[in-house]
Image 1: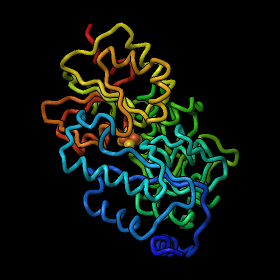
Image 2 (image 1 turned 45 degrees about the vertical axis):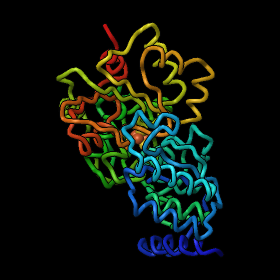
Image 3 (image 1 turned 180 degrees about the horizontal axis):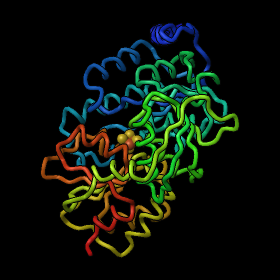
Length: 377
Ligand code: F3S
């Protein structure tokens, strides 16, 4: 066993010991977060370098979360020379260890597709919740270092999220609210997560949505909860308590993020957009022009981007003045935003994080509203 593998095993065993299991389990894939230099800084870079220089190499399929900029358009993200060099070094070292340069928070659109019952080690809360709750895989909410250690060993620490008992619903949530668009789905997940942030909820009264809708539900839930998953249907029910979530509760969170001034930045694509979403955005933007005083930023994965280019979807968005980017997002990029900026997004997750990392005003609106505000009338 090489040095990097030995150190990774030690880290994973320490986690498994902390949970009282003291055991590792084999995994089928890993997804590694903490890729942006903005988030991990020099200490994160040195951690990755140490493993790469100690001969680390992945033993299972492993993919990367977004980094600080679109590797083909770094100038769009206020990246200085130091940031650029260090970000490229992080990506280079991870590739050297065999991690695929997917740079997306939707690895399930990029060939990392766990099957029901697979044990995996994924970081990135939105992807973790989605893989557990929608795809039926088993993963804990790994951090960047533990997901990388898992990739290098092909093992994860055994924790409750990898056991059927540890995944039982702990609270029933009766939902009296019908989400109508992606923003609503994200908001619903966010509100449910806020109510009982440590418990696995069983959602009652929610009609299973499309994969994209469930992606937004997962991202919103992951932003306010520390639980590894939710349940949408489960025959045996739930032995925990019951809480209710109604329209007024969702409305009061939405009001906190209402739009009171014209946006300067409209951001769509948290989590990264699917091809289906990009097609419908292009349809909305056809023959329209983005206002000169607005930056319309739409983020996706590079695999979806390539398909969007082939289909002509990227061209429609570009011609309208919208910026379709890959590899990154508003939250993990170093883009400078000031007090005078107003960010309008349709993602509860972006709204949640943007309010803590920038002084800009944050507003949440449906996809149609976002696009309407971005274009000339
Ligand atoms: Fe993805 Fe960035 Fe949102 S990494 S889930 S688009 S905060």
